[in-house]
Image (cartoon, rainbow, N blue to C red; front, side, top):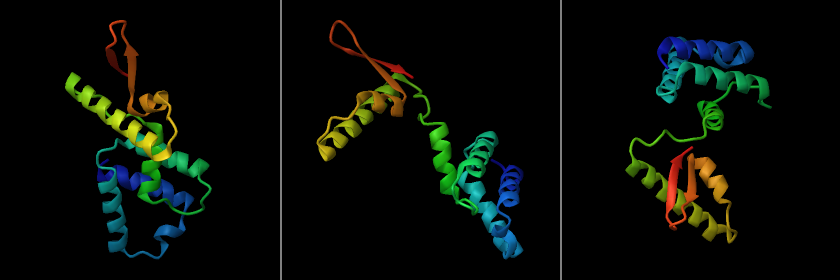
Length: 138
């Protein structure tokens, strides 16, 4: 997001939670804008706006959100990582998924659901008749 878009989001949140900026001076307000711009520099405006709307509508809190609260909402809205650029990247992501799967299994003693991991990583696996695993992105 750029500066103007960041200010739009902060104004929207300020309408719902007006006490946040009330006691701040101009430099403090500018620091908030800069912090939010930095937090969401790689996120498009519509995504952050949707997360802010969600927070306003569903949050049990009656105060202005921290950036990490909107980041959590955004992750729930877009749970998959970016699509791998090459087959090698897909294999690397699959290896990481298996490592995380094994680590959870070791730490809990319970076999986790592979379907949950496939959904989390955006990978679908298919066992071929020859015994090899075929990887598919989402």
